[in-house]
Length: 155
Image (cartoon, rainbow, N blue to C red):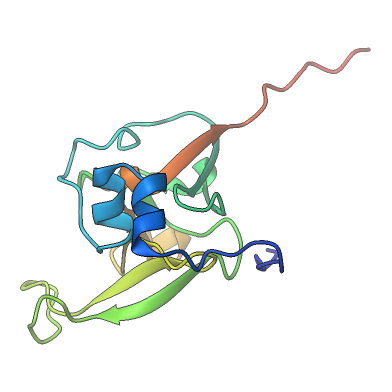
């Protein structure tokens, strides 16, 4: 996997007012204020098309549809990233509890590596045969781009 790198001309150091002009109120709440959309309402929960999921704020490629799976949680779930370095992980103790799977406790926050936007959380309850990771991502933090249709080979 290739690592995503910021280029000189790409600046995502925006003021909160600039982000508010770019994002819808729901997107701003999730991406910039670390909110969470309600389960089972996001437009990508039941998406099964081939393509790639990009950061809604900056367009960075994050996840491939090949790694998406139905976790039954109500949010799009992926077992791997599209590229190493696509996201940054941070300990999230916003629940104010000690780490405990049954109580919630500390979680691992998933942020876009390019622009720092909050995407969701990472859990260790994903498919074991795929590494056991579950990137639980808010639909409104993503922008889906369909894969181009394959044309049959001409003989």
